[in-house]
Image 1: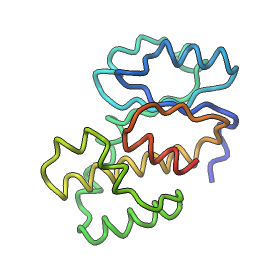
Image 2: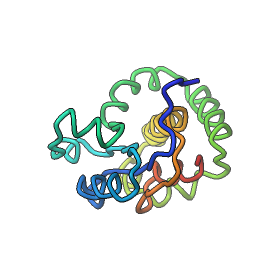
Image 3: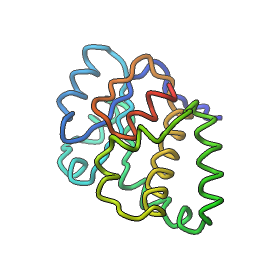
Image 4: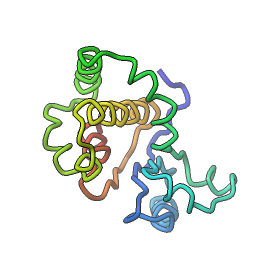
Length: 156
């Protein structure tokens, strides 16, 4: 259990559609810290925030960095272990059917390998689990059909 849980925050996903200006506005309008999931490296590279601004806004979760930090461990699992661990996290998060969530996410449309697709899905679930463990949001502003957004919505 995380003793440093961010309560009454706003969870959002930063991508090409939701810019840092939207995150700043949400922070000010709702007067609440932001738990911001940054989905793509090129989006992360364009965020021009000082450390003080980042601290003021809330917590930032980098999907690219999280992926690289965890993918070797995920790749070391057998497909059976991967599926078993994914099902455990899905039950914990309250996700009953993930096939439709994956169907709408364009990231998965460009992955032609079943194993690679399952690895990407599992790493994203691991990130959602981390966010659930570290945040107690009062509002989720999640945007369009990305797997991470759907999983966060189901979990909260």
